[in-house]
Image 1: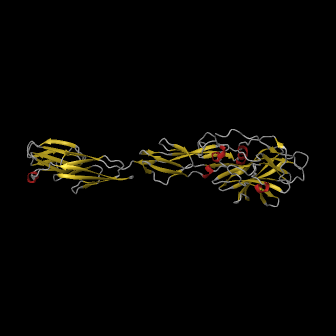
Image 2: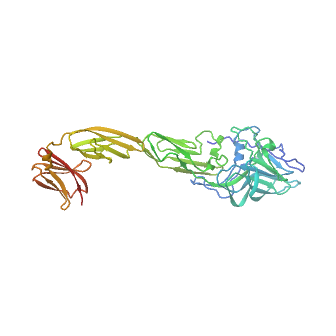
Length: 491
């Protein structure tokens, strides 16, 4: 929540007469409390969600003075008379900003005896590394009067700036231009002594107001701006991680969102708790948090959509944007399979692994396979070690199980008399040499029985036209002989 105690404005002012020294602080209480007003250009609705922020007046010096305690804390008047003609206030900008004009808090005082209006030129400057104005970017003229007020000067067209800049005001006559400043002293927590204010003399020389006054003086000269924000996130990891892994999300949003001059959420002491933050992360697994960058540990496999919301709380505007990504959390790799020997000596192996992407089988008799599920027919009785190797995103695992074959008849000559084959001409499965009363079983490659028929002659035919194309296993039982073979059905 915003702090609800607003300091009482204290300022001093006076009637300036010829001969008054430059930048004199006059010791008379300024009792007219002024509150900055919204700029006269179009404003964006504060309730709409958009990546384009509305036109705003950046009141950083005013908020800094009004909401934060420091020694000698008050508002004062800098009466720019004599050789002083220009006052400037710098703003640190890290993004692209459109400057529409300038708003300042001041008044005009005549060197004569009658009320005076005063033409004032408002400037937009480039600045150097010391925040001192260098070259003029644009300017606008406004006429002010002897009443302290917020005055506004708008440029003919918005001016795009991409770096640090300053706004300034200068009297067009020799009469006094009085500009309100803060008098915050030079002790801040945190340290906000920034040297942003500069004064220019008639000779063209600039002087730091901080060094001139020996304190962190700042002018109440504010830019009227608009800008876009873009919230985005990136991760150094892939968009696929393993269960139990932690992932870091880097915030790649617009840099202006982390600028305390433009975003009140970044003006740290303005808030009472950490929940008042620019960025809010929602990780889609029940966890969330407030921080610049995000990070989370995902313990359950699945697909997640982590999001980040970014809020730009300006001085008159409110806008926000969001970003998200799809994150796949893969299970750890664990090999597993079940064995079906109902069609022995043909064995069916059903994959029950988790996290697998590729598979490798070794059936213990020289036979291999690379499919998730597998079938294998043994040609000799015995005990075999069947090994399954599973590889996945999260590693590899191996499982070995033993199978025992006992059904193969040793009378090979008798078994060789039994034949089973497919004829493409009539789409039939032909069984030869089997005894009447035997049986024929057809299995698909997953070991599922798809046809069963009794043998009723030395040559029997089975209509297999109802089966889809593919490879099948035939098991013929004829007396004490079991014959197992394969055939390929084509249509």
